[in-house]
Length: 79
Image 1 (cartoon, rainbow, N blue to C red):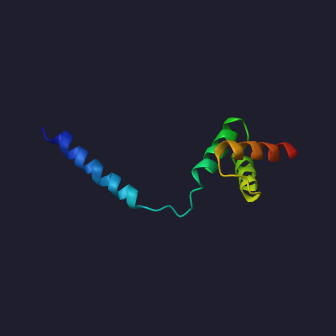
Image 2 (tube, one colour):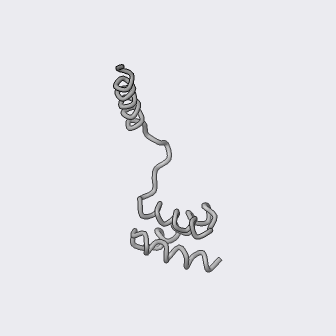
Image 3 (cartoon, rainbow, N blue to C red):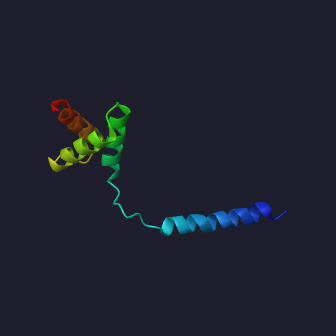
């Protein structure tokens, strides 16, 4: 009954293959990504949330999730 062990080793090889892949699109910093997710959970459209967070980052808002969400909400309220 080597089946579970061979599956484990095959899975590990696949995970190694996945970790060496690179995405073509750059990933946003974690706080910015978290801020976008928070705004989406509040009911904002993903595109509007991303634009508001980018605007907040461009305005010099510290890249902390709470600060980005506050600034992005202020930006969304102006629209």
